[in-house]
Image 1: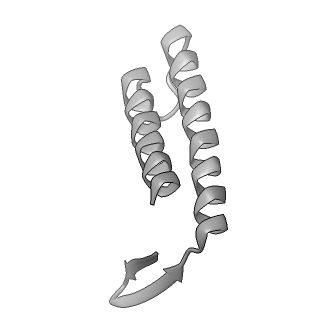
Image 2: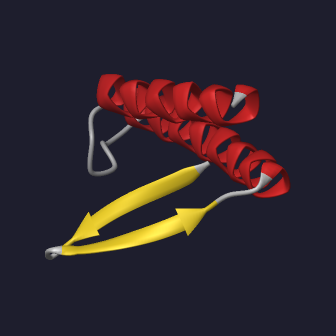
Length: 72
């Protein structure tokens, strides 16, 4: 799997092998758990950069990418 990143008219190719995809998937899942914790904190008290529902959307997107990388 080759991921292309376009930054300032420069294309950076990132090659991910199977173990790299699994590790990245794991870290994305950890990130989604952190986003859910931020959502809970924002629901209880003051917001951290985003509202609670926006943190839940961030968690959903992270989980979607994690599942995609795990299955790819």
